[in-house]
Length: 390
Image 1 (cartoon, rainbow, N blue to C red):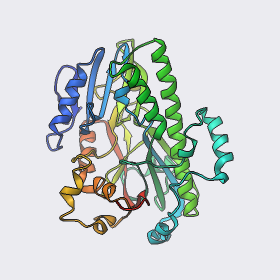
Image 2: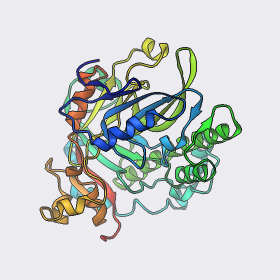
Image 3: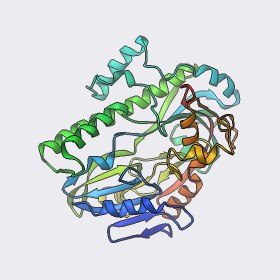
């Protein structure tokens, strides 16, 4: 571990250098969460920011309890990266904008056979939210066409099956209404007290949680496929990683539970860490070896940042930015990329200015010895919503 690791308390570690701004409230939430019953260790990532009671951009390790509220309502939220067949030299963003006018409505009858088949293959039995398959949702979720801007490890890039001469597609979404339903029902019965391991309620939650993970993965798949179909290209999945989940592990030879809330697993191979829609994203290789992963949890709880991290709260952004930026100004970024977002509030809430600099996040992870950069990706076209302006 390098200079980017701060020991806040015996239980709390913050992976962030002094140059990385961390809101005081977020650190307070990190410390407060470490005081929960059965909590063993808490790690904040450089993208740490305050959430509703619990911080986002953190990992939490417990012994004989799980806390569904730490995972949150968007169980299985994550990132999937696709290699498209679209050649970079033929990229025409303006034409693609015109083609992406029907990628938010429920998938039509032409998709139903594939939905049924893929649900069976993914062991997704819930049918109540089928109409939401292939939809991005609100908040910071998006679909973004990207291009390779800088390559640090060409051999690793090729091994992943990525062609730097073709466009990539990054999808960020989760379990939509299903995850919301699971958390709401849990809170109505148990509030925030957590669930003792091996109780019936514990098993019931994990069963629902695990299906929500599979649902979210399938949702990202259908989002990617409908976007590819809209631009009349094909694509191959490169990676798909959830960053809101709880999973079983070990600590000191005893069973333990690792909660990740906006925290990317570092034990599943290469991952993508996105910036804001006006910033670079980074494809990175976690540095922990297979032996290190299998031998137990490290100082970082085998976790990484999941993005740039917010600087400003949603709801504050329009007031901060509207005097300087008109709506039209925010539809093109300083990197020259275009943005599709016809919801005024969302346009300001997700503006690049509301987020930290992603390079700083990556520098902290590199300084801590947690990742190596494979490539830097530049946004070309970010899709948020075609919904009417408010």
